Picture 1 (tube, helix red, strand yellow):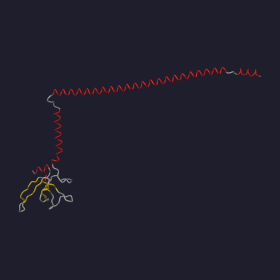
Picture 2 (spheres, one colour; picture 1 turned 135 degrees about the horizontal axis):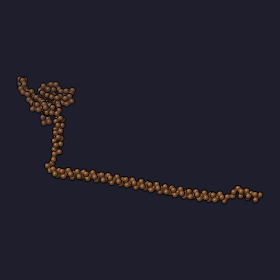
Picture 3 (cartoon, helix red, strand yellow; picture 1 turned 90 degrees about the vertical axis):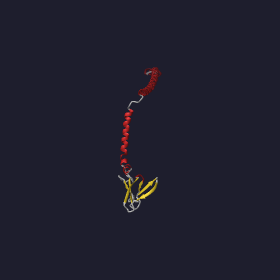
Picture 4 (cartoon, one colour; picture 1 turned 180 degrees about the vertical axis):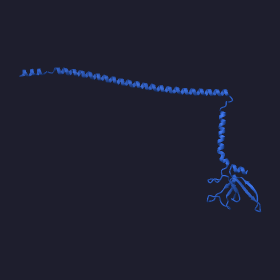
Length: 211
């Protein structure tokens, strides 16, 4: 019991019992889980005869002991804790990691083995594979159709822009031709008007006759 308290909870506790003559009569092993270390106002264990330990039974303080009355022997004393750190507590994380590693190894070999109903397993695997392939093919076709639709829209828009540009060019050429025709007509009328005006010899003759 004493070794178990030492290794598991690091609270080996012994109560020395004396006879009426003051001689050591026996060493009683006390459950260390029921012992609560006390501290004084200075943060240290009280000196005798002040109580240094308190035994809690069923959630109720049962007895107080001084440092001379009770041997409370933690193996690994810590400055920031009232209780020690047992070897079991120190190795708990390592044991937990080892157990999880063994469980992972067991799952590796167990999951890789063939099931009892192997044909049904192969059938389920084949169905799942075909379903995955079908889903991938459907997704590919959908992306391809979306791409084709986008390209068709772009081609139609480009064709519309070309038609609009061609129509605009044709309208500009038609207006230019009309403008050139008007300029030609104006030039022809201007030449006729200039040719109808009297020249210098005609003016000279008119002036001579009047004189």
